[in-house]
Amino acid sequence: MTDTVATPSLIKTLPGAAYTDPAYFTAEQAAIFETMWFCVVRSADIPDPGSYRTVQVGRESLIISRARDKSVKAFLNVCKHRGARLCTDEQGQVQRSFQCPYHAWTYGLDGKLIAAPNLTKMPDIDRVEFGLTSLPVREWLGYVWVCLADEPPSFEDSVQQDIVDRLGDLDSISHYDVADLALGKRIVYDVAANWKLIIENFMECYHCATIHPELTEVLPEFADGYAAQYFVGHGAEFGPDVKGFTVDGSEGLDKIPTVADDQDRRYYAITVRPQVFVNLVPDHVIIHRMFPLAADRTVVECDWLYLPSVVEAGKDVTASVELFHRVNSQDFDACERTQLGMSSRSYREGGVLVPSEHHIGAFHDWVTSMVGTPRQEA
Image (cartoon, rainbow, N blue to C red; front, side, top):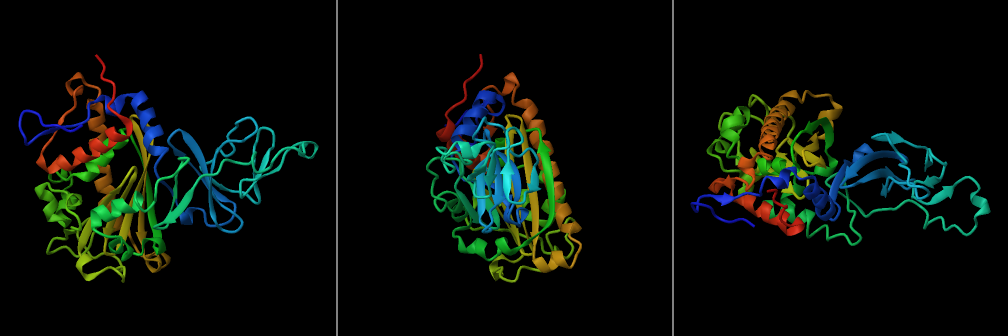
């Protein structure tokens, strides 16, 4: 899809319709979000049997819950009787079952149909067949990943391969012991922008000197415009006078003890398609999960994770949270301003990428390989 324009220094972007056309967004929901592994909740968000969260993945509402044996289950949030939505709250706790509020069809925590009015008079009903529609589930990095595809892709060759492609191996991320970290802060952002704009922004640092003064103070190389994600295995080094990954460069929290010496005082950013950003620093990990809800709306849940001892002791995480909260706010404001231009006739054919952004072209190629090229309006 990518090609050069007037000069080899510039390559074309996706056209504006890729960010505004509801039909193209629907095609992305079907071809990307409903076929790939999608990171839905943190495992600790559903700690006990019967605890659940509802999430939107593609065109489907899902129930992510924990069964009586403590295993994680994922179901389509649809009653098999007449199609009513079972759970309307974002999160909750049930004792033994999910009950449809319409006709009281009742499902066990394993999804099996266990009760309904006059069910005993209908002995021919298969309680598994008429149970909730279950989905494949994986737990990794302390998060639950779900796939809506009838035949899910290999988790190792998709999710984990994106980590390998960025860091060079899986062992590098294992040093951060992400699954055993504790949630220190969560902020939810409702961004009036297309999900691809958020990914493109995260992948490049051509904008960093312009809108991220705090970040470039901590990571001076970002001021030069080259994103660390472009280089396999490279982590951006803290400035010489910077003590921690904090808004003012002050001392951070307790270092994760298994972080390797060559990872110390470095920041690693990773994009896991289609909707996860992983940010690694020596004393904490930041995970972004995007939930694309419309062509021009994306909800982003951002978690700051620390050693359990840091969270349990009530240590002040404000300085480290504030740094990336500012980065997020600055980035999302830029994405929202960019979204406003996507419907302009000036952007009908798209824009251009400068050399330090050329790797975004590979992302555009991937999107068009999955979905195709959007229909151009006259």
